[in-house]
Structures are given as structure tokens and as C-alpha cells.
Image (cartoon, rainbow, N blue to C red):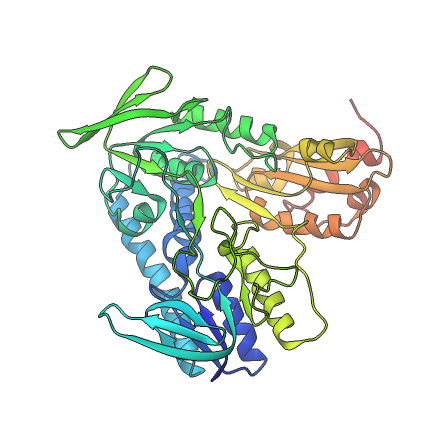
Length: 459
């Protein structure tokens, strides 16, 4: 009997195994597909790889400012795709070698819990076997959702996973259904690499979430307009037909489009279908119900990541894995706190945000004052030829304590962690302002974004 069986080897499962090994547990892994899960193979990592390429294409036109004269260049998406595969292949192989070096058995099949301590593994050849563990962690992730008549066929109607894992040749045109994170990230990549991109969104803006300020959405829309991405808001796909290897699309606003492919980016669903035969409780959307310690209705069976109703983020899954392992090993239980979860988006701009913004603070009855500073005057951003963007810091009006931040521009996904620590430590505007930042750095933009609130307005 193993001390722990982990079903699913994405970011949550990986962190669970890594932590368990450090705690000297005897661990087994069940994974039906590739190690690394959706994040490594079909989402986070390949998306950022290709976005780095797209950002580099954008920067080519600026290199003359460094005295680098590039008279002409060509873009080969297939090469980018193949290089991306090599990069994630290296990372996946490293993970395989780690497990092998630690003698962790990997059962390459679909896992289903058939007893409190039993997991049935179904192999592709039809054979099955049952393994036993004192504790079990479910970390099977999620899969792309579909909407209405738009059912993925892997050819004309594709998912984000199809795009990242199979689409080695870029179509000449594509309709992205959904203007959320995935739609905005892949839409930008595809457009910059030469695809004609349309985005249709049911709501009235890009990134339609209260956690994302409308200011961020407006800036990203302005960027999309400038590079020729056509957007349709308050609109749905009413109908479509496939003729002569093209997709004819009728939109609810009366307009019609003809594209090569439709990309569905309308969210994800928990991968909990047929996960057990013992009555593990789920909600109406298929998320596994867990208590504050991430335990299911069986105290030795835990669930983490996209299968529970918490933010569907790789780093949240990893965070929950550590908590689950602590609770397995200790009588002193820990509970997850998602308050300061950092978010990052890699699209026309790099975008980071954490804590509350003006809208979410208002919903909690908190009055806000904010400080703003554009990247335009940040010397490091100017040196990098990347001075588009801004920082906005949100402070509670009376105490002047920092409660959240938006960062739009180069390095946003990195420096958002710095400001998250300030929020956690309860820094006031004055403390944020007086912190000693290296010069020149992107981080010193926080000193200027806090100036008005900490010291007084200049204009």
C-alpha cells in the first residue's frame, strides 16, 4: 500500500508529489496523458512561449533605435510551433527523469477511485488493475467547454488545446469565441504571427471579470484595434456552416464572417466525469466538494486544482497541493486563503493584478483612492523600448493602506509579486512610496504611482 496516490500530474499533482517525496512518503502517480498536464503541454507554457515570439516580432520594428538594421525578415509559424514542442518536451522529460530517479511508479492510464483506499487504473489496451493507498489526491484538472452548436471537431472548430498541441500551421483567418484570458492571449499571438483574427464576446468588454478593472479592458481593446483585431461585443454566434473548407458564420448582430477556423475559448469544466464509484460529492457544475482542509466527504481523499471550485490557475493548484500534504501529515490543519492570488495575462500587453480594484472594493463597501503612473516615464521601460503601459495602485481612503494593484506593461507578471507582498504586509501609501527601489528598474514605478496619495498632488 502506498502512502499517497496522486491522480493527475499537472501543476497540482506535480507539487503534491514533490512535497510528498520531501516528506519521505511512498508515492504513486496515475496519469492518463502526458506528464505536466494541461499547463505544461497545452496551455500555460506553450502559450507564453509563443507569446514571447509574438512580442519579439512586435519589437523588431524598434531595433533600429539600438542601431540594429534589419532590412527584411520572414515569419515561419511552423518553426515556432516545433521549437515550442522541443522546449516543453525538455521540461516534460526532466519531470520524467525526476520521478524515475526517485523510483516513483507512474501508471499510464485513467484513474478511478473504486474504494476509500483503492484506485482502478484503466489502460489504453483495455486492461485494468487496482492499486491501494492510505491517502489519495485528485488532481485531474479540467477540459475545454463548448457552447451551443459550437462543438469542437478538431478541424474547423477547435479548442485551445487543439491550437497549442496540434495546430502547427496557422490559418489565414480565425474567429475566437470568447474574449476572456485565453481568447485574448491566443488572439494576440495568432494576429501577430499573421492570422486575421476576429473576437466575439457575449459581454460588453474584453476580459469581462470584476477582478479585471475596466481600465485594463479599455487599454487592451485600444491595443487590439491598433493591430487590426476586430472585436464584437454583446454578440454571439447565431449559426454557422462549412463550405469549401471554410466556415461561414452568422453573428447575432446581423454580421457575417467567413473564416478558416473557429477557436472556442469559453471556459473550462472540471475533469471529474467517472472519477469514482464510491459517491464522492460534487456540485451541480461537477466540481468536487471539499471542506476547508481540501478533504472530500472521505477524510483521506483530497481534491485540488481545477476539480474544486477555486481559481482555475496552475499556481493555485500547486498552492493547494502543499496545503493538502500538510493536512495529510499534520493534526494541525491549514486552510487555503485566495485573497492575494496574483493573476497575469500575456496578450497585447503583459498584465498583472492582485487584491482589490475600485469595482471589487466598492462591492465590499470600501472607499478607494488610487495612484497612477504611466510606463512612458519609467527609465527602464524606455531603455527596453517597451514604454507602453501603466501602474495603478488602490488604497483604502482613510487609512491609505494598499489593497490592490493593476500593472499593465513589460514585466507585469514579475513585479506584481512585489506589490502583493506590500498588500499582505499592510503597507500604507507612504511606506510604498518611501521603499528604496533600485534605479533604473521597473519596480520604481510603484514609488511614482504612490506619490499623489503619499505626499500630495503635483498637478
